Amino acid sequence: MQAAKIYIILVILSLVGCNESAVQATNEKAPQQFTARFETTKGEFDIKVSKQWSPKAADRLYNLIKSGYYNNTTFYRVVPNFVAQFGPVDTIYTNAWKKIKVPDEKVLLSNKKGTITFARLGKESRGFDLFINLRDNTYLDTINFEGVKGYPAFGTVTNGMDVVGKLYSGYGETTLQYEKLYTNQKRLLKAYPKLDIVTEAYITSEK
Image (cartoon, rainbow, N blue to C red):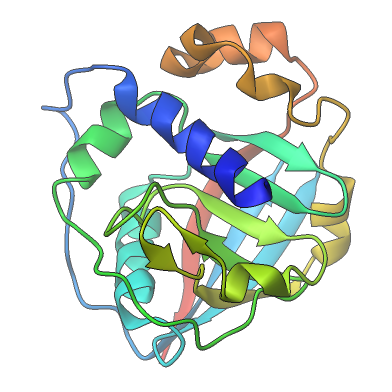
């Protein structure tokens, strides 16, 4: 089951210990709408996020982007005709941010092609790695997994979906095989050198 695979990679990331003292998590309220740009090794794509779709998720993503959380992060899981998933592979970042829980919310925006959603472990575990739906994955709207119903999408790719479609997908699910690789991005990229990277993400407008 694809939802189980989203869960597995987050378990791997959460089990690796680290010292997060240098990372400061914030909990600022996001504007009702904001846009952001992600610069990648394949080009740029833009997203639009609205709090009407998932207010708590919008708040978290706003803070993550402003903090530089996604800068130099890896598209470590790109599965053709499913999702492109990305985030830090060093848990120094997730360990700092998971202290601020993101409450679960109902699915108001469907997981259609081009929408953006947080991966999750179970209850109140959203707010770290993102995935972009590469097709209509509407079954994710209602699937019951680890005691929570559905994966709430809360943003859409407004420009550059062709760039997302070019992200290297040749490794498929094989990048999830070795737990030790998720303690250090250099090791991950040495093992899988064709993986694409988010070089920088930043807010471009607020309303």
